[in-house]
Length: 247
Image (tube, rainbow, N blue to C red):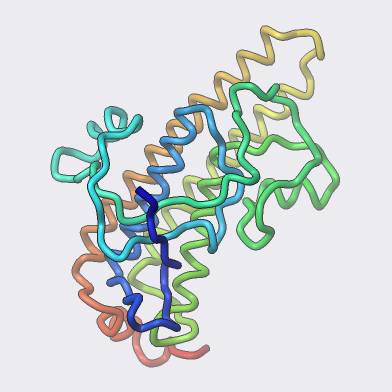
């Protein structure tokens, strides 16, 4: 069945509908879970951007995914992991990461405003680096901030509703950046023919990325319960106050 995807906030077409704050976050989280499913299946998207996260007019039911057994202990039984409100598009930059040698590269993949800071800094310095799932997860932060800055009734706000979630995601990404930088240093110091050392470090990256997925998704669902308290965007605007409008 073909899915009719809409931009996360499609304000130019009233008939397309504007999702509630909670529906917006759910769409992002479901796309993030879709990214996790791809990763577990051996595919890394590498281009998380505003145009590649789409939402559905109404959620649909999907069979249990690869990630369900890993997420269920973290999220509890109340979260419906079969529901799908958001999904990813465009696999033009995707790779089968298990089939690609874990070597640093100067090649760039992604849409610049959404690329992780670690990758941007490496490319700006013309240094080779590894593009990992943790980098894609950081791209979800930039996408969320971009969508919020183009909200349905205002152009910009210093948001108090999504702020704590974005800060938590940012902290997770910062910690991940430190870890990945250390692993890259170890990989660069290893002998080219030392395949055992390279595999050991790549296994560490794979384990780390799995942990980052869990942290991102768990944080998203924890904050979702609070965001459900804002039934519409007027409630979000009221929370932020008039002083935050149109800065």
